[in-house]
Length: 229
Length: 229
DNA sequence: AATCGTATAATTGTATACAATCATACGAAG
DNA sequence: CTTCGTATGATTGTATACAATTATACGATT
Image (cartoon, rainbow over all chains, first blue to last red; front, top):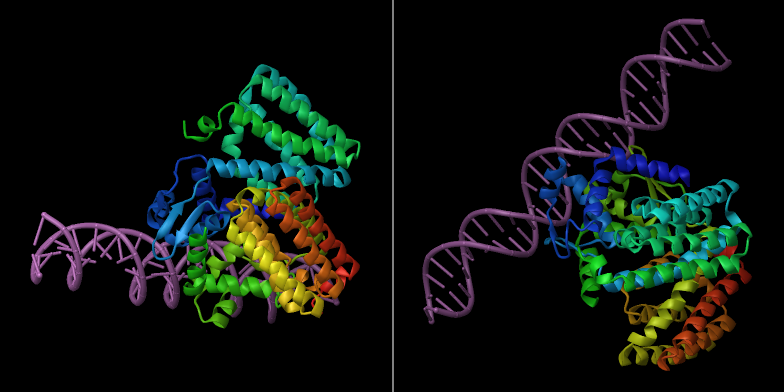
């Protein structure tokens, strides 16, 4: 698993296609490209200093991820994520994170448990002080540990994808001290359940955690969080 | 949504890349290519009478689907699906099909409900007579209707992907008269719950349905079902 | 003035040529 | 006999050329 990720990283770093893929993906998720924007192979290629070939290959991947839609002989158009999609993703994630937490009970390693504990400890510090950048990082990492610990490459892949999708939105959901503290407390609960090998509880708490995150986002105004400022 | 599917169909039919993608995907899922087989661009290209360019683009998509792994400057290797993966997929699907059924309660159309009813009626006929080919078709279609009816392009896409993944295995799970009849009865239950807008029940029944399918598969010997005869 | 058709430009689809990287085989040195 | 290094071949990565398709503009016709 680490091996695969390593390879992937190498690919992304050293192949032009990987660089194009990551760049365009980033630009779509960050909002640089907006819905229905047309992505032209030559333009993207020139911007990154590569020819059309790696751009095209990257486009095919982006299409499969659902970030762009390619109409044959016509062009590539940014699909974007609607508010409906965001809601759907949170609902799907709540189910899958529950499954993930339950599976993690069986497969998590001592090292992963220790990293979780450290993560929560550090997050407590930053949560109280409103260090939202660090909180976002720590939150991402907490979930990432769980994805790795569930020991299912399919579930891990699936959850990581969705996580990326809503990354931009998710950052905003941690932008209050109250939510940061509550979020970290929920992490603590999930951690303890996994540590105690209580799969049922871990499932419930992780499911609830994602629900809470979504509710908080809605409360704070999904519209503003979602639109590009 | 139909529009997208139509476009996709057109792409697959008329573009070389689409043809290559479908062909290789089919060959992997059908077991023609086995795990760790190396797929060479030139060989695949010659086999289908196309150049390397569309082959490479198809490979990038297959990589993202997780069906092959591309090692930079080395080659493309078939990943295959392990028995562990199959189990994971069924567990994931059981959760997501539940969600799908629940959402379908809100969004299903009269036409879709009618097609479900017809599907179940026809399946009863074939189930009792052991027409497994038709049963497999009908079963796929029943779930497909649900995917469309849930009105979430993300969930629909996700479930369809997994469905394809285990298609080959799934066919075998319907290879007894007893299971065919039980399966159809479960469909009937799900249909009625959706028809009555009982989301909670629909969720439970759909979740259980996938679990039952998996249990049946295990009982009938997952090993034989999975290996290539 | 409006509409249709054609010509031109722009863009994507595919094939091929070349560069870079990796695997293999063979021979020399120890 | 083993091992290392080099050379050769095979394969992938990228760029570019050409073909096919689509969009646009302009003029002719009604």
